[in-house]
Amino acid sequence: MKIAMTGVSGQMGREVLRETLEIPEAEWVRVLLTPKKRNNKLAKSLKKRYGARVQIVRGGITDQAVCAALVEGTDYVVHMAGVIPPASDANPASSEACNKRGAMCIIDAVKACSPQPKYIHISTVAVYGNRNEKHPFGRVGDPLLVSAFDRYAMDKLYGERYCLDADLDSWIILRQTAMLHPDMLKNNVSDGLMFHTTANAPLEWVSARDSGYLIRRIFERDLRGEIEDFWKNIYNIGAGKKGMCTGYDTFNDGFSIIGGSAEKFVRPDWLALRNFHGLWFYDGDVLEQLFSYQRDGVKEYWKEIARHHKIYALGKFVPAKLIDFFLFRRLLRHPNSPRRWVEDGDEAKVIAAYGSLRAARALSSDWKDYKLLSKGDFGDYDALRDKENAVLLSHGYDESKPISAWTGEDLASAARFRGGECCGEYGGDPYQKLTWRCHDGHEFATSPFTVLRGGHWCPVCQQPAPWDFDRIAKFSPFVAQVWYDSHEKDENRVYDLEDGKPVVRALSEDGR
Image (tube, rainbow, N blue to C red):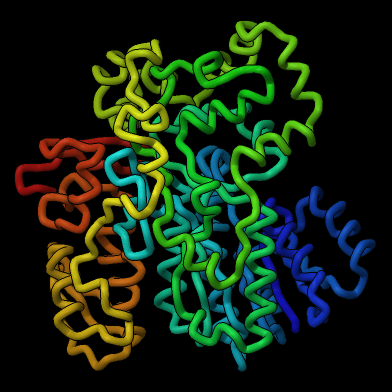
């Protein structure tokens, strides 16, 4: 077995590489490392530890020749490279290069191979966009509503769609949820990004090592010929119920290891009200049933981080007010902090995160005035996290059918639910491209699988920017059913980028 990987310098990537090299059948793994100086040390470390079992290709992920050299002669390609927030916010060009164009180059390189290696594409939970207590559970096939100005998610959405439309021989897309790793706390106290987290955001975590173990299990079972029906599909990676919490819980658990809590270190008016991303996976057990990889729970993992970084325990001997002042309040002035947007009158970002400047300024600073999902203010919290009680979004067709039983009427019904129509005649192949037309009259070719199973729709309307879901929700019940969980029906705005800067404008009289 010969494997190519991108992204091995990341938290998930290093675990995938380590787990893969524990498989006896893994002859070698070829990895892509960019020519940055920080990767010189990693390259030496990998060669010292693994010798000839690790082959290193140095170069940029947008260099087609480099990508071709990476994947040549391999049996599997695992694409994990990504520029994630806050780096993607600070440097959107790097996000576009890696998350969008880099994915395209890797996919093109795979497609050019003969025979083609099996391709594993790591996507993200961020493509689903904002969720709250009204629809905390989500699944593959739900609307993909990338949050306004989320550069990372918009580029990852494009990369995922490119994979679906590439007609590869054998592929899977894995939508990765929030990642537990040893440096979580350290990495999240240096940027205003932490305050983008909404208190009632349903978050499902999974550890980097469980994600790595999952990829190993995929290799092992595929080598034994046990998962032939697994390929050409999309799955959600999570930890199940033991990984489910909320934004409030995450602050509580994380801050507890330095002697604090959400209510000691954070005020509710510091946090955004919407335009975040996260959900609990209703279908997360699909991968678990196949690969038995879910081992780590979120609360236990935070305790492990405390054991790993013993210096955090010193925080318990420092007055909470001092930690609050020197560690957290300084982040309120960070350019990526929602409260900074409010102070600066950054209209576009404020409206996206709060609805209006008035709503942002009206928020209470007292947690007693804030209804919390995890405190039972919307019903029994444990029962709400039970998938048996989940209120699911409709996909617009008979979802009880297996993919093999789809009919032309299923496709037509799904298209109508999105405000458009299916223009082609379905021949029974869910991966055969057909012509579709959206509400705006854009015609596009894509597979029934991409629409019904993937949750994608018109690439012109869906692919931000601009983000004009206020308009789309008025004629697409598919979008409306979740968009109005956090937006008012009389909101009529378009979120856009002008010269790379966020702007918001009112819809014109013709609804555009």
